[in-house]
Length: 240
Ligand code: GLN
Image 1 (cartoon, rainbow, N blue to C red):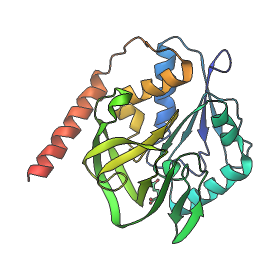
Image 2 (cartoon, rainbow, N blue to C red):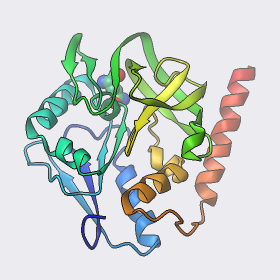
Image 3 (cartoon, rainbow, N blue to C red):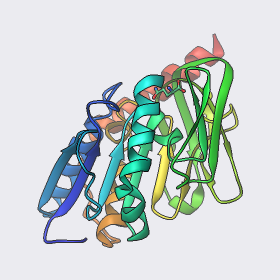
Image 4 (cartoon, helix red, strand yellow):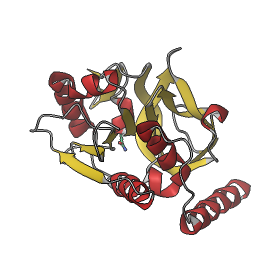
C-alpha cells in the first residue's frame, strides 16, 4: 500500500459508469474495511488530473462516445501509466477493459487505447447481451466467474496477455475466452457489478494491492446464493 490507507480511484464516473460498475468501488472498500484496512475512495472526473499514487484504479463500462473520450483523456493525462509503472492494480470492465488495450472500435472508428494490456478489440457480428460465465485461469485460484455482459466489441489477446477465463456461457472476448490479465492489470466483460457477484475476485485485487496474502474470510452467503441461482438459470436456459 502506498500510504496509511488503501487508496481506490474510481476513474471518470462522468464517462465510464454504466451498468452499476460503481458498485465495484463500494465492494472493494467494504471488504477492505472489514479486514481492518483504512480506505479512501476518490472519484476522479474526466476534467480532473488522475493521481498516480493510488493503490487500485477501477474503470467501468461506457457507450462508444464516452469510451473514446475517456481513452483520449487517460492517454493525455498519463497518470494511469505512471501508476501502473509503480505497481498499482487496475481493474477494467467492458469499455474500461477494452481501452486498456492497443486499440478498440467506437462509433465505427478504430481508436487508440492505452497499450497497457496486449489486447485489441474490433466489432462482432452482433451485440453480446446476457449472462456470462467462465472457468478462471487456475493460476489465479478463483471459483468460476459469473456476470452480465452487454457489448458490441470482440477482443483478441496478444502473447503478452492471458485470458481471465474460458467461457462456459455467453461470449466474453470471442465466445472462447473472457477477459484478460497481466501482472496486476485485469479486465473483464462482466458487469453485475463484477465484484459484488465475484467476491473472490475482489479479494484477489485486495491481495495484489495490500500484499497481504491471507485475508480473513468474510460471510459471502448472499453472493454465493446469487451465483448459484444465476448458474442454475444459465444451465436451464441452455437445456431449453
Ligand atoms: N462500447 C463498448 C462496446 O459496445 C463497451 C460497452 C460497455 O462498456 N458495456 O463494445
